Image (cartoon, rainbow, N blue to C red):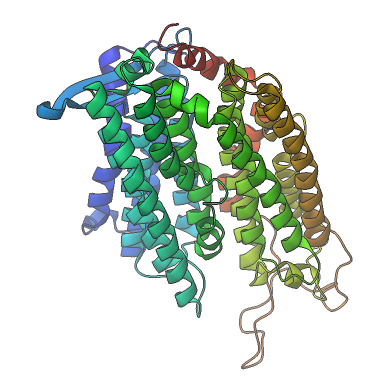
Length: 548
């Protein structure tokens, strides 16, 4: 770790939040003559890589300058009055809870920008694509960095419009515009309706407590709010956060959005946008309205385990032969199950459970981000993500055709099912440990039941992911393609016939985009203390009402 002054840390955090917005504006301007490269499109895509790369470097330097001996302390704080009449402040800061999410967001956005530079999704001009990507990054980073309820809501909403356009304009494939438009509308309607209810809850807390400052409210630990106010606030805010998480039964927008979104849109949606909901539960509801949370915790736990089982059964149905299941849709439903473990950990209201939830958040971002990258690559090569097409008469047999791609898909699948030694294991295990001994005042028999159901869910998760690996990666290579060149020549198809699929293995730019996710999945699995050492002191302080 390096010694960095507080003023430099403040500047870095402000740069991380505001920098992508400045980059988005610059992306819409004409490129200077000396930076145009071979075309304006290449210039703006390179601009996206440069800006997101600079933000990632700033996030890494911020993490290196972070005082790891005091992860429960808010660091790099900026606190400026904004709307004095309501005591709304431009208050930024990071602790051991928000720092990993900040770095994860910066990393995934940079990898998406790098991937898009070489494989831009079909659609309108890259200029708008890069600008939207940067606005999305800014809103997500701001959500994890702001410490004022009003600013949190504004940042929370800021990501909706760019994601809507990424799905509606660059999603799907030719001929399915209506499908992607419908998915985009469903996404924004669900999340906007949830946000309206959440805003009412945030205003209720701020106006009753006399401040919107999240640190002051967490330190007060609900003592300035009556039980009835806490109950209403938790219900309102929880509904808004549950839509974004997404919690069953408010999840139905997610599979459509993922299926229609471009590859990088799916990576960011699963990797960072879903984390905004669970982060809100930990940062706002748990410390600010603990009595209200204690009342609703058993219901949250129940919805969480139903989501775990529902998501797994939906994936099993999609993976079944003859079901016509889409591989992207299957991974989307798997997110419903995985985020169920996160919600279960939060519902226990224990340090063990909440640490498990935060760990599972990061693990899900790494693993599911990698899975969507890989599924996008498979779809590009085969022209389809339909499981029956991939594993039917044509036979995917990725191990034989593209062994590195097949190996990476199998690796991501076993990481997602929670294989010990990889990142997916620790979060789910700690969430179930938390359910074994929930916080005082919660029904232990109920949470023991939740733990057993969640444990059964892990078996179902292993079942559907192993079925996917067997169907897509294994099997005999079709006779008509054995011995065929790995790259089909351009124009090899007859007029009117589909061009033969390309079976290239992992390309250089794909290797560059995916390697960090693989490495971090292994690192977090083998050395969980790196992450838990950051989150645990901050969680202990949060649950204790701001007391270390």
